[in-house]
Image (cartoon, rainbow, N blue to C red; front, side):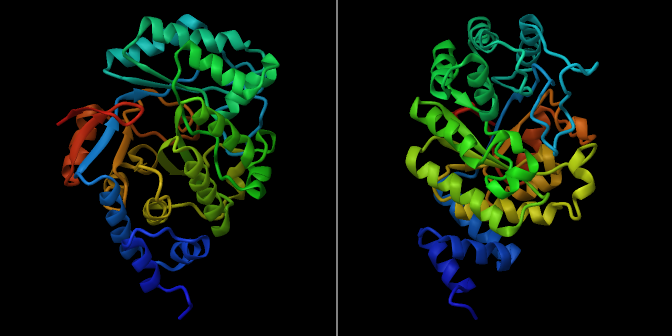
Length: 361
């Protein structure tokens, strides 16, 4: 038996002590899945004592699919000049927001490609008009790499871009674009997005300005175990500095129609996903919530994840196009989400983007 063993790791977790990176790597590689799930539930209820699982009513439209970044895992983007590329007008985006609100949405997660033809004022106008026309909805807009693109196009710093978005009415940032926060992996997946620090620096500055954001991970492609630990270590360290992350949201890579598809030798199935949910809950001791994804993993796996440390069930995602481009499609309704949560033995509660409870059911 190594100096690191199941008993020593379990003792540290149950006593509320932080796992070291070496202990985390041992647990990720050797921990029994069901035992890991049990430990994760202990942490989950220590941080969120009530048997409540939250969800948000939201939609995830896209304002453009034109992108110059050439990520090998993406089937959604189109290069400038391609005939099926598009950029929506302000009114077209507002129609999508209105449609989401008509279905009860309180959050709209708006994303697009890295399109250098779009002026910075376009983004500011999207935020201002959303807040003016629909004050009841949270504009959960633009990933870190989109913010970086805005700064490059406008000749501004990232801090200046975020400050102007804040003045326009934005207060949260989605966590997309993190992929794996390992420079070795990012060089192979998305060279033009830059190193891990490119994503981390945007969220660090956003938190400094009072934004809340999520942290994400797309796994199950070319990463190795140490890359998983590197990603979680980066998230944990930044959270120690800022306390700005509301939740951690992992999902497995969907290879369909992507350039990366031919290089994937194994896919992350339900067992691997449940290990990730449980392990991240144990390792990220300073992140309040871990989100189970019915959308990316399937409803049954999402339900099981609620017993492996997750306390949130994500959103309704009335519109979603990026996963759909890989031919992976799941849909649901608010009633369906509540039923799935109740069937799992928990009380559903509708939340805001910032994880404030709006209504219990």
